[in-house]
Amino acid sequence: AVVGHELAHIINRDSLSTSICHAFGNLINVQLRIVRPIFWFLISRKHWLPRLLGFVITGLLLVLMIASQFVEVLTNQISKRREYRADMTGSSISRDPLSLASALDKMEKATIAVYKELEAIPDGTRKIHTVNPAFDRSYSDLNVFEKMYYQLKSTHPPAEKRIERLLSLKKDE
Image (cartoon, rainbow, N blue to C red; front, side):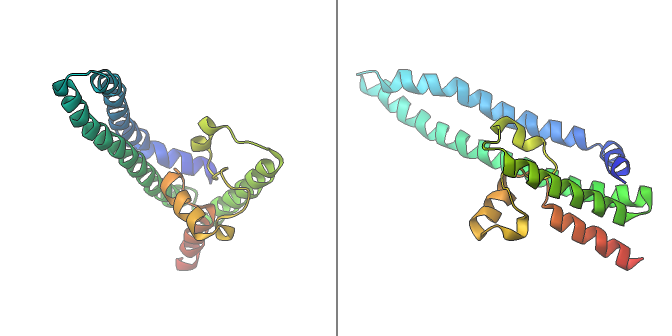
């Protein structure tokens, strides 16, 4: 079932859409890196014209920073939809949605157990996990603000929701 899920990512060309989203995000980040030093240079000048340009660039910096966060959230939302789609395609390939649901449940429990033992989670590795390691408990145990943060920052939907969808597929058969 897990192999079917991963095969579904290949069939659905998920890496292409993810690459395009990351390219837009990187483009915005490069612009931020170019504009930021120009801002500091202009704002430090004593003449009024460079300082005025510095304030204009401040607006541009704010727009770029907001756009950068927007692209990140958009990329994460697209990634979540692709995960749901890969779950559905993978379960149709294996013809057994319960085995994928069982595998997701086991991965979530194992991840929670591992991260309860660790003191700190390396920031650079959070996005590569199937189950969000940012929390050492299940999605249903999170408070409202943690759920909102999870929805914005995670690349995978909560395992509990994925399992529910897979179980509903079995009921429909």
